[in-house]
Image 1: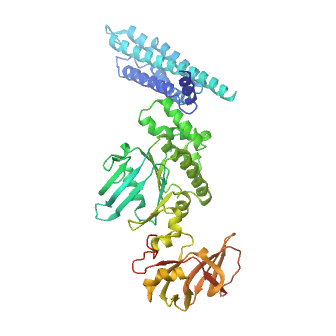
Image 2 (image 1 turned 180 degrees about the vertical axis):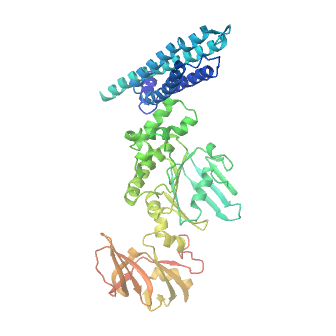
Image 3 (image 1 turned 30 degrees about the vertical axis):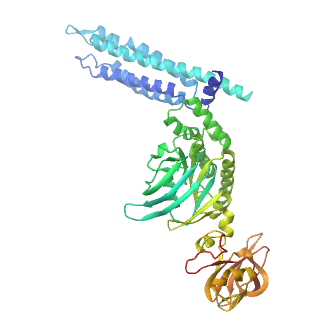
Length: 155
Length: 357
């Protein structure tokens, strides 16, 4: 058992952190599903606001940042875990901005965003956040294990 | 245990070109066999048939008694090392070495142990995180060998693995292959056109020409007792001198020269009395001093030896390898004599030997 653990740790010296990397990429996929669902809606003039422009720009920034982080965590770089945590927190916060507002706003007696669409986009953002936080947590754990293992090799 | 038997192998391509004729060979466990011959002689085709990369037209291939003639390459338990390394440029050395085991979905920890063990043997541990482009040719070839080692195959197949390396690296890598063979005690089939590789590496050599096996034997057997003129001239550098002579009155008579023979040699050539014979003499068996006059054309100093090229009598070309530093000039006449002589039948090109030898 102990030998297996040592081998697993030693393996990390030569293999990539694919688990964290793939989780970060999966977070991008959920974010894409979120904004596809959001932007295909066209209810009156609700979506013609500055906040939508900001949302579009943030999505682009998010995808780029998450992709760079997925490459960073692949190489066991701890700093990218902190970026992933920040991105995850923002994804959670986003639930309370556009989706919540669109769900509450009524136009011609009907909500801008129906219940089904609201639940879908909330799930997408939540899953995206979970993936980002999990990627960060896995990377932090592996970084700690790897540095301890490298220190033991040098000792 | 890994005993390989090649029985009456033929290879005929779809365009009816026959590349290999009736190839027979028994490879013992742990033996290193080198297939050697000029380009196009069928040595690589034979290796590819063994690997399963070419269909066998006729004959049987047995591995430890099991007929694998029609078995797909992946089920033959053999690993091949190619001339061009065939490494994946986007993968690290570790990933390249682990790749075949990853495809087989082996336990990652087991893969790791095998890769580390192979890297240790090949002195590649410090290179495992690098990409192939960051390594030298010799290191890349070692990675290719490592990829074969991790599979722990029954038979290793090497297809001209050193051809892409420069002379110095070739020598070093050749010694590494030799050490590797001793360490793993692996059964190896090795293809090369370089006779130095063949002579230094092989337990036995298979010399091929035009798809036919010319001779199978130990390096010394091929060097000292070639079966025919092809093997005699192919093995050895510079090649053996071949002189057209006639055996007459107990002497060999050529165009403007005569060579006296020992009693044993006369007895051997008795059936060829007054018949043409080919006399074979290796350059290192020509010594200064004697009845023959060598008219020097060029003198090549190699450090320990000197190659002296010239003619004896009426333009019969001869190369001598003297174990000293000489400074003969074009036009010098050097008296020489031959010591060890070999004789060949000009009709069949086969060696003339005592019966039973």
